[in-house]
Image (cartoon, rainbow, N blue to C red):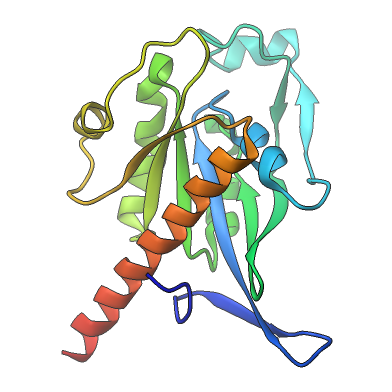
Length: 206
């Protein structure tokens, strides 16, 4: 699958006359699923983070069951950039995971090619809101199961069934801390989005 000619791309003209393509990818998922970790692990630049320490008041609002060791939380977004190959870069926007920051999602998703939904099998139900959001807005997405140490491992088809995903929605296993693993997730996401947008274009002209 070629990366060229996929939707929602921004082209820039390089210093040496070459055209560079930049694609916007959202990194979403439940509270504590590893969004900030993934963006930081793969980014070629120092990532922009908007984390704030979890307060006693915040712990009373946010469900920290299963992520009790988490000490900070994203309150606006994470931002990073990765070059996949010469001429193609991805702009990564990590969404806040708490329900009280959902009002930011519409603005963050504007112009996005696709999304990664990070899943923690210890709190798989936290993914339902993100899955529903992208399905309703017809934004292609890949579910990436973040394999936390000590967490039970499930096969991709079991996760797909548990989340009631539409047929063909990819589910991949990853380690959000590992750059190569995160990069593989992003490549799969762009490839899948390219197929989805191409199919929609063919349906529209057919």
